[in-house]
Length: 253
Image (cartoon, rainbow, N blue to C red; front, side, top):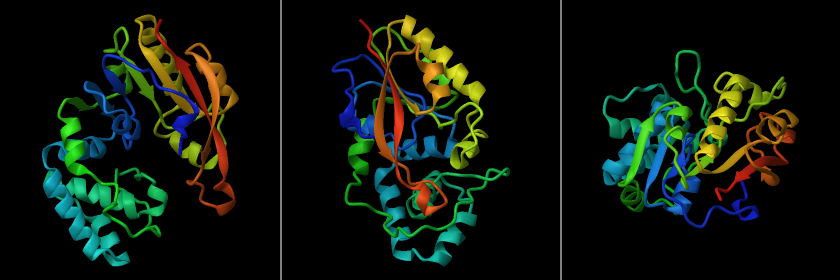
C-alpha cells in the first residue's frame, strides 16, 4: 500500500485524470469535482459505472454474496458469466474481495482464475456506495488506452499514473506476469505521452517500480522520490515484505 503522506498532491487543479484506475483510491480520497477516469479493464470500468448508476442494487447483490459465501459459492460464482450489469459488477467485487490477496488475473481466454483467499468480508465497514455514486456523477468514465486520456490533459490538469509494474529485463515473479499486460514498450510509450502532457502544463505524479531501468526512463518526467510500501502479492510468504516504490513528481509552474 502506497503511503501517500510521504508526498503531496497539488493543492488545486482543473481536471483530475487517472488513466490506470484500479481501485480509484486516490480519486476517492481527493474527491475532485471534475475527473476523467479510465482503464483498459472492461469489467472494472463497468463496475464503476454500476456504482454510479445503481449503488443500492449493487450493495444488495453483494449482501447476498456475503450470506452465501463459502468455498463452493466462490468457485461457482467464478465460473459464472452473468447477463446483467449489476450481477456482473457484484461478481467482480465479490471475487476481488474474497480471492487470494485481491489479485486480478485472467487466463488466455479472459477468464478470472485466481483461487479463493482467506478473507470472508464481502461488504466492508468503509463501503459507501451512495457517496461514491454521487461523486462519480461528474466523472467521465471510459474504457480506453492510457494515451487517449492523457492526451486530453491541458494546463493545470492533474494526472495521477499508477501502471502495472514492469521493468526492463525483469525476472521477478509477479512483475514478470505484468509484462503480459503492460510491456516495457508500454512503459516507454507512457513516458513519451507524459512528456507531451508536461509540455502542455499538466501536473503529474507517477508511481512505478523502484528499479534502475524505471528510474532512468522516467527521470525526465520529474523529481524522483522513494516511498515505502508493503508487498502482498508474492506467492511465497518470504516474498511478502516491506519494499519501495518510485514516485516521479512534476508540478506545472
